[in-house]
Image (cartoon, rainbow, N blue to C red; front, side):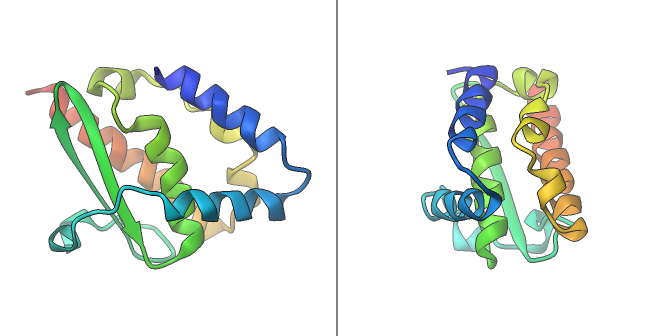
Length: 138
């Protein structure tokens, strides 16, 4: 499934909830199913700078697609990472680089996060794109 289709699925899922408390609960549940980063990869170079809580992100290229893994000490941060990884994991680097991230605005994610969490979201997206850029040159 392509990035646009995954984004549309997420927008549809988030539209089922009546308020943001329900959406946060859903993100927390998504965070519980995230592909966890190997503990040996929880190193400073994999820490996302600008996040309110510690978030580690790693990627590897498998059959021309990036596979992302992450972990966080905070359940909301882990949930946000789960949403992003659902969109970007198992996608080709060039598709990640060209992706329009309008789903973030459509579900209202940025506007319902604290300023530091919104900065963390932007930092996560930048790091995902950096990985895509690095692997697109291979």
